[in-house]
Amino acid sequence: MIGGTAGAAEGFETSLGAWSTPGPPAGSPAVIRDWGLSCELFKTYGAVTTGDILLLGFGLEHVTAAADRKALLGKALAALKN
Image 1 (tube, rainbow, N blue to C red):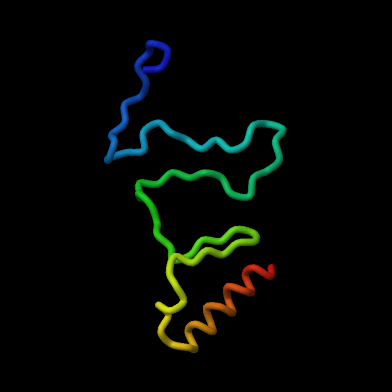
Image 2: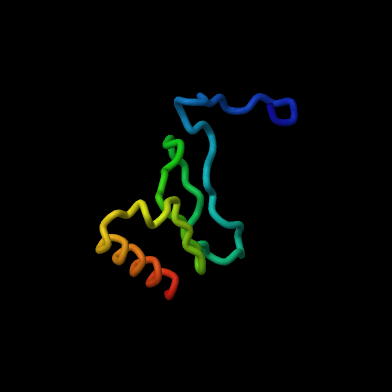
């Protein structure tokens, strides 16, 4: 209920209900990425990056082959360089 008025019904596990992603308000700068709707609970990744941070969700010792470690570190450093 919103303000005493019943809203649209939605199923907790079966639908996305009446939710929408309208984008930025009029006059706002354009957004590169907007929110989206999905029935998927979450995605898992082994790493998270920002503009200047790379956080691996595992230790490099778990990458057993030296060539694979070298390739991973090369890609990680290249990503931070950009």
